[in-house]
Length: 159
Image (tube, rainbow, N blue to C red; front, side, top):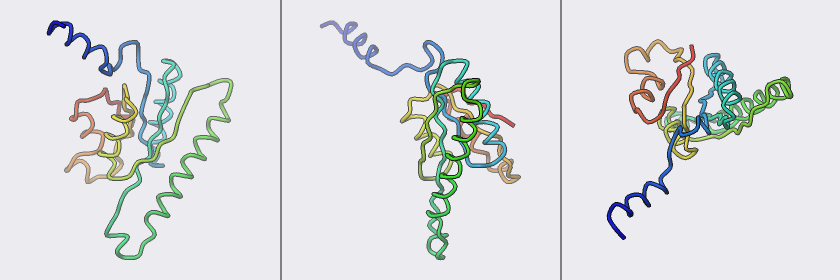
């Protein structure tokens, strides 16, 4: 087997993003207004492209909160359940008019690393997130800015 043939074999089995339009669009959701607008925008993209919409909620892991006795895991589980219920209700309202394939995924960790892990595991072709609503992110950088700087997927930031 020639070296050129071996390289061709490796490339054939490698995952390729965006060849015929996006197949998976990841949208980060956390219940904020901007994340819900991002989910709606991503839903429109997924519908027009015939792509899967993967809604991702990253449950924060707060060791300090747990040490103080705060029921962090219970609270974030409730948020995830509320988000899934909200998405189901919205999907039911537009059924037949706005059909889109969607899945809901929960990852644990900080939002940036959780979305990176989700996009990698789900083989995302694009990532859509809401603009940060926190003033401190202007100084240290928002999740959206960090995703753009990672340069691994097209990232759309919805205001």
